Amino acid sequence: MKSRTWRIPLAAALTVVVIGYALLLWRGPWWIDGAHLRTKNLQPADGVVITGFRTMLVALGAGAVAALGLYYTHKGHKQTEALFEHTREKDREQAELVREGQVTERYVEAIKLLATQNEEGKVRLTERLGGIYALERIMRDSEKDHDTVVQVLAAFVRQRAPLRDVDDPEPDYIRPPLDDVQAALTVLGRRPSRVESQPLDLSFTDLAMADLRKARLQGAILEQVLLLDARLDKADLRDTVLGGAVLVGATLRGADLRGANLMWRGEPAQIQAEQLLSTLFDRTTRLPKILAKDERIRDQHATIALSKNIRLRESQSR
Image (cartoon, rainbow, N blue to C red; front, top):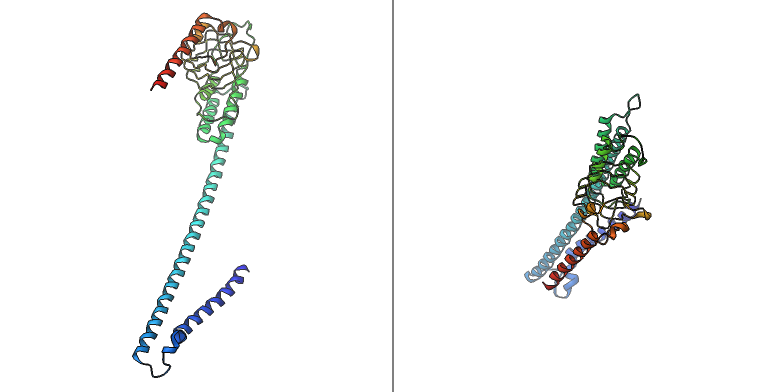
């Protein structure tokens, strides 16, 4: 309805323009220069003026038609571009929906594998490991699902390796984590470096003898975690919460403890000075009082401070 409304005035305007143009071609020379042109018995000089005027009008008309053609060509090109961009955006949205649907299906299948048990209620280790590594693939492929996968795997570790009483009389008290727990820890330790909405929470878990070498655990909550004889060499433990954690016998060579809190809620981590001296720490590392007063630790602090001052002076002198 709207297109018909504007087409009628446009057709009328074009009709007027065409009629006016035809009249100009026919009578224009006399309207413009009628005082010098004869209406009868035209002379060669009159013909020159009339021909020149009409030639000019034809050139102007051709120019106007060409300009109008360029305008509509440009307009059509813009419309084609807009249509193409709209189609491409729709295709992109459709592809994203398909991809998200595929990720959701993969996620559901991975969760099923993670919870799989046989008829006797026993864990099917192979299927469970498959679920853990499937979740890792989803985490790497889909940044949107990164946080969800991290929280699921952390909850899995907390459920499968809950903290037991340190005075447990069982002779096999100190034993490595179950294979599926170790697999989940390995995946969490090598997850992509991305901004996460929540810290990794492994608090109140039994991770004795766990292999966490080079694990990326920055900012993790490791409160009251049993890490007896765990391997944490070169682990990134910056800004971690380690209050109440038991690190007796753990290897920490090259581990980064800068910013870590070993005194969370008044509970000191159980760690020896010898272990701490093999790590990277500074004054941002919150230590238990007994370690903070240790002469070797204080000497290390002094050495670090002196080294920083030397580097600062060197940079200022350049």
